[in-house]
Image (cartoon, rainbow, N blue to C red; front, side, top):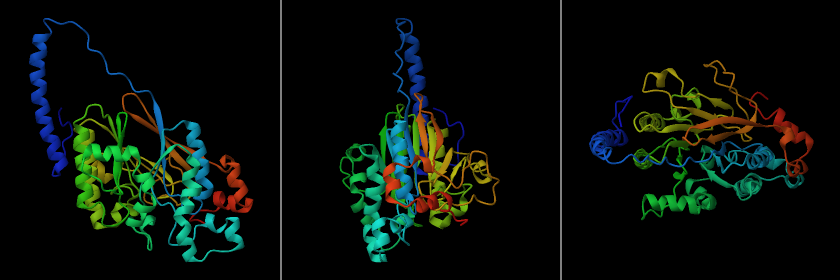
Length: 384
């Protein structure tokens, strides 16, 4: 294994990957010598590893404001797609203010909530109206910055959403990694066929902290040593630093900038050194955007990773950053989700799936007035 595009490796992960490369080259040379001898006595063809069938998964984030209207439609569409799971990248409810979809429920129109009543029911509302519509389809959650707006805390988040954070799949993966690790965290990973899905926590300015970075680098080192893992997909709320959406990303804090750059360098090493397909997903900004790391900074600091922003699950929609010309593939003032199609070789194609008012299930239309549903689709925007 050769490091085709070596970085200035200063992280534990980069150093470990370099050591793996040296060891791999030595083993390769030894294998060639042994194979030359064996070739004289054996002509049996080597059986190829069976190809994994094509399969899909879905992802989006930011379902405050109108998420109770939009998310049931996303759930219905994702199930029609035959996706294996849905991945929510955070910001379930506004928390700092009333969500309009809660205010406009019939019960709360008749008897408006006060702020205490809203705070008490907001997460339960998310579970009832946005998660349960997925039925038996698996749902994975990432924490967003709105999940820790006071009075909410990480500890409350872990307690409220333990059923989604400590599933048998995630528990098994955590104990496979470390048989003595019984601690729930807001970051985790799981391996699905040939893909390692990694959920990170950058909801607050102090993240990624040293513990989370060490954990991430340990996971990436393990992935790099396993040939069966062909792809790494990383999901988080805020985009990593120096993206096109830099003003609304981990660049919002010094720690976020420094440690986000380090995580990016680790992922570059997994791509360029360990030859994994690497994909980086985020939300936080309420539009759809691809190619988010095709910036001057990353072109001059190691290279561009494939990256997307998909904060399109119901939140108030934003305009694109003014310092970049909009690209034809970008979409604003839309709702929807990103559908990932995993190919047998581990490569993943991503396509944005838009949700329109016509896609709403009858159960949603029956809960809200036509005027409010229209408002969600026509006026839930920073421009209004």
